[in-house]
Length: 175
Image (cartoon, rainbow, N blue to C red; front, side):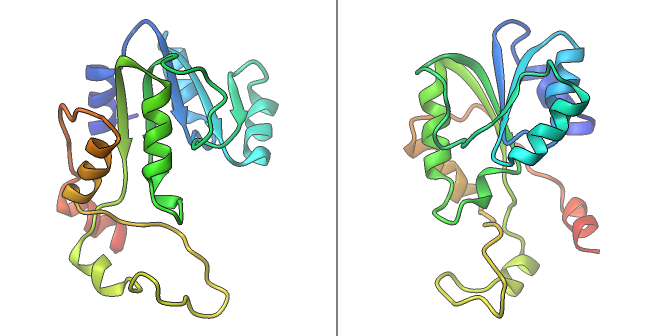
């Protein structure tokens, strides 16, 4: 990570204990954190992506799986990272959030990011329940800060701090 992600990782991730990156994709944070001495493993829903990771890093602890049904015992991990993943479930993020709560130890830390609603996103989005055009399929939700906080609180999390990207980040993404 770099910038704010690096700062948040350095501030909140435990140096000892197990960290899970849920939705690890190509495993970049798993690799990076392990290189810095953290005990980090990853899970991703794309078996082909996990196999590509294993081709380069055969011993890297990553596996294919569903972050809504993790193959972990209750309260078995110290930290949970999910950056840009929970917004991709058509049913919404709550199942993934509840599963994160289940596997985290009582004082565990969850670092999560999701897209935030910005005016231009809202204006271009299809209303919920409206059929998508042609062969388009669901991709992701964007949340207001209060909306996502509510999901976390309803799942039993205590929110210690939250950060938002600056509006210039949204413009960079857009243009």
